[in-house]
Image 1: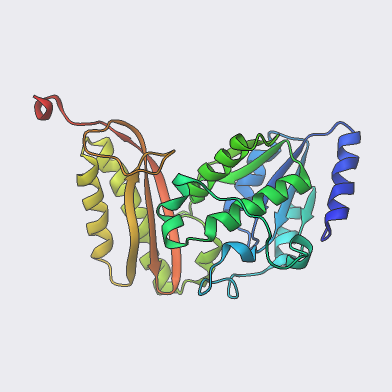
Image 2: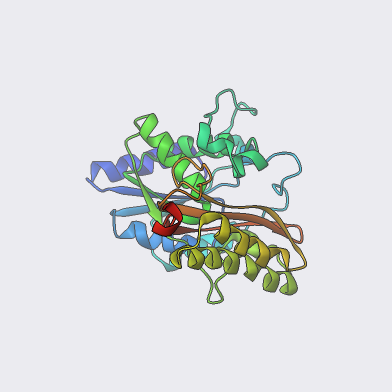
Length: 288
């Protein structure tokens, strides 16, 4: 389906049958990570809809909008193999008939850091299109991956703040057998760059292990940065350990749940990764 009216009619028919509806919003170029979202949602609802839309409003000038992979036919075939009930693939004109947006949703304070700082218009565009898709499809549940963890938090905040009648289902990161977080952008890596990109997941997991072993956040962060800085071909944007709701970097005197987040360029491809960490906090001896 390509038109909003088609999707409205399809969902209305489902509702008349008393069926529950789930949505997986994507930008296409699908891989096993997206299929894990589908699988998680199939355990929750009767009908799964996947949207495929490369949203121009979340790309800034100089971003990779034009080069972002578009593989709609292959995506539809892949989704059919896992029993997806419907695919919604609107055009930019269908989603933005007036051309430029007249209204957008601002992400709030957590959206000003990290991805929001590097890509200042990104989250406003992403939240606005997610809000539009939620209003068009009106799902009971929508699945989002933890790989885009900051986006997941902001979408969850938006749903709560605007009282949207949908439950957000977080789905863990899906990794390749060598540990690399699955991403549509991985297809743009050369063979050599893909080997280099493995150090992103290695750095994230090294920070995670350091925290498990009782290292202070600043110490764990240094270990991860050292690993990345020793690899030619990696340009680090940020590596930080943050409070997982506010995205404020955690201090060494903090204990509890946190998130290590990372963004870096490998060649011309910008990749992100993250993992949950548990901060032990300063030892008794250090506090004495």
